[in-house]
Amino acid sequence: MSAVPLVDVQDLSKRVRDASGELTILHSLSFTLQARESVAIVGASGSGKSTLLGLLAGLDTPSAGRVRIQGEDLFERDEDGRAELRGRTMGFVFQSFQLLPNLTALENVMLPLELRGDREAEEKARVMLQRVGLGERLKHRPRVLSGGEQQRVALARAFVVKPALLLADEPTGSLDHATGAQVMALMDELNREAGTTLVLVTHDERLAAHCDRRLRIEAGRLV
Image (cartoon, rainbow, N blue to C red):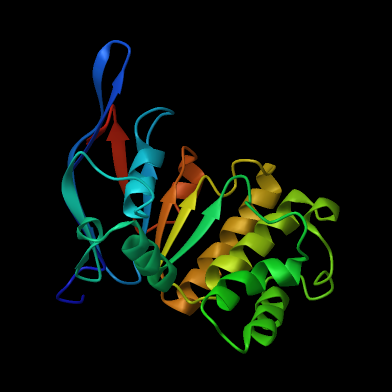
């Protein structure tokens, strides 16, 4: 295990104001994630899982506490700085795929590489799509792909940048059980090959069982 954890979360809290006053969504969470580890964040709907994922990504800011990624304090950076760190270290997979509808599968996977100025974006994207079994679907737009194929494009897009940290929010939630199992097996495989740290938010205990360990959240607290 490395001396510095890949992710170090200390006393992380999130509070929001609503009509009835202040609501605490996350209560002082602390944990670390090591390189190459896979961790499932589990809990009931509304327990704070997706809020935690948004904070780990720097897409939301905490009310208290800190998140360090590879030793760098995420929230000591401004929004542009967080975006730079995110682009350099993270990949994302969502339940709703989040593919751009007007781009082909190939163009969707090329996009994060192009944003980095990678001159080999097209070749790397082709190789990655072949790796996920979509070598024959490069020119297809999302609307003509099945849900499972769209999620495989999303996996290819996430892994093509070789992220240190992959954040996945209910990645099989909109797929049937058989397709979801195939996508999860593929994610496992890609994760091992790339040596990525995987954080998987799910309410599905079968999915969670694929991970090295689980963090269970109940009513915003780590239990």
